[in-house]
Length: 242
Image (tube, rainbow, N blue to C red; front, side, top):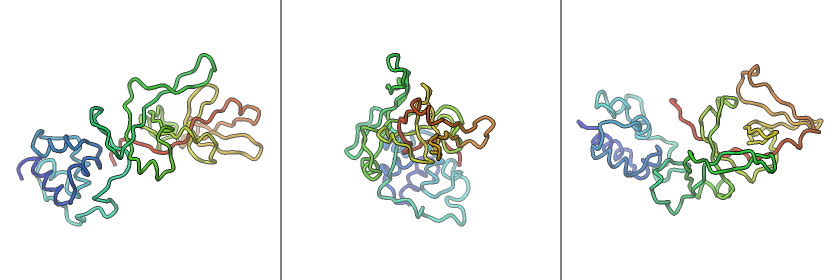
């Protein structure tokens, strides 16, 4: 198999996946995968992800060197369904919305001059996100209450690293003890874990273990009017080399 396209097609067929299922599993469009399989490119940033999905060697898939499947690597991913891939997927904005998908807008926050509170607005640089209706229903969520936005800073690392994309349920405005919340505190936006204390105060805690840079904040009971729960985190998307 002397071309990337031939190796991609052979590995996909051996894995028992359709182009549509494979493309969705790694966050690309079916048209892009079809183009790769037809040797429309000599390389792709998706090669490593496809190799993991197909259970083949990344080196073999990218270059044809070495064995197709290293010794000891099982031919299937036992915990991944071949027939249905759940969750979020990337897409081209021009791609038509599928019947089983919903679009979640990417928003940012601005300080309202009238109320002095943070308000949602469409992020001009953000791209909408797509989720399967089945996922939304299974989580007992309402699509029109979901928004996505980018995280800035490392205070919630490693779970929410700088630049990752989080989906927030705006209807979840009550404190769930110990859970991650999107909050407006004194006109500033934060994502923190919130803990109720016996004296009625609220502790805002970062996940970053460096407590010199990210110490706990205590909001006294008589200052809670400055705290507003904007929603809870229901999904996280991030790039990883793992």
